Length: 81
Image (tube, rainbow, N blue to C red; front, top):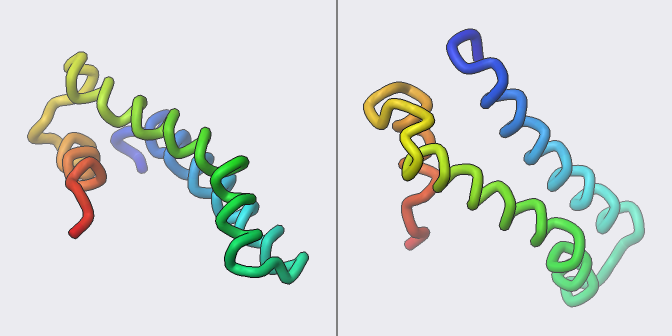
């Protein structure tokens, strides 16, 4: 976090929002379908913006691809198996 404080702060904020949304679904004891709908509505836009942020950092060369941050971004953009 010392090397990229602004970027790391942003990533932590994104995950904080997602985890807060998850806590809401658990506290309200939502069903799986309710959780999905809640996350699609509240977490989906956050994740879409995060995805655009990740892509722009590599595509617009805002970060060196071989740096620690560049490696982390590349890892996050790899498709899930």
